[in-house]
Image (cartoon, rainbow, N blue to C red; front, side, top):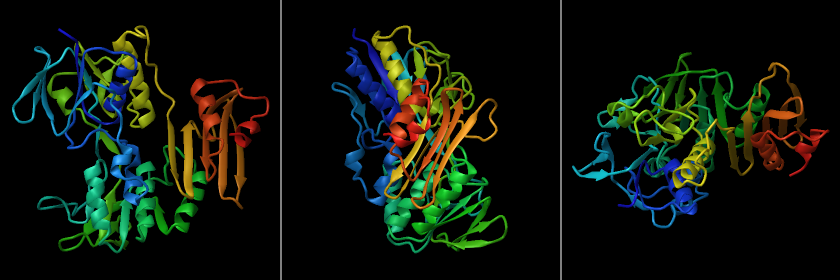
Length: 398
């Protein structure tokens, strides 16, 4: 009997694994089980679909020739002893190797008035799927003013997209500055200026406390007591790994499904990759590490790299949309031991560039407003290559 590989989750990690497995000559049956009614797509580009820069069909992902994708087929339970999946509708499916790529769910903040009789209050949205995107776009066409709660990578992207649709937009962000996981205060200040030019006002250091309105949302009350009027609210408060299936089956879970350097979970024949996986205490929650994990697992399961080990990723956070673009990676703090900081600021062009160096190695960087050097910087960082004698060359070449 040919090998049967089941991939639970038809998102970016699952699709990448299947595509790479086939590209490396992997044999047997590969089946992706996805709860959504459409095939895999690039979730990173949802804000660009919302803005109208891409059609939904343009962000579809290739799963490799011969891969079977079962759309609208949710896996409801794992039978580890029988190596069998239980499916929505009552069916089952066998497997020899199981890859958990279940992704993550949006975090819903503890706001008074968040829920209505049928889920989120009318006018309130999260953005995780193409269906979410379609509902948000339809609502935005009738809205007059929007508030985005959360000023991370997704929140900034959604705010820019809504502004491109003609809406006045405000971002409420609890941290002291925008995108605090990736940008320093000076870069975040410049980003705030970019957003203001696009019609997006930002309120860092503020916490949303409640939603107001008799039926549909009409405003967001801040902890300070100030009320922001809005008939459209988007929640961009991060994500939480989807671990329910693994936990119910007795697989080790902390924040995510715990995996070792082989990306193996605690049950025989089970692996986990992407947003649901926790490796050495870290859940990355970014596309780059998810694809790194998918590539390595595909190489292991095809036998092309049986000794390969996953030791972590060096992810790059990036937003590139018209006049608003930035990229950030690694450690970008000012007081890291043994580091030097190289910074170039061009107010006339609205660009900000920062490199954090340890000896002749690049340990972090920020580019805002000008990404021409991002390719060379990303390669130097990912490969841990020695830097040129004059590191300024990295900022002035493509």
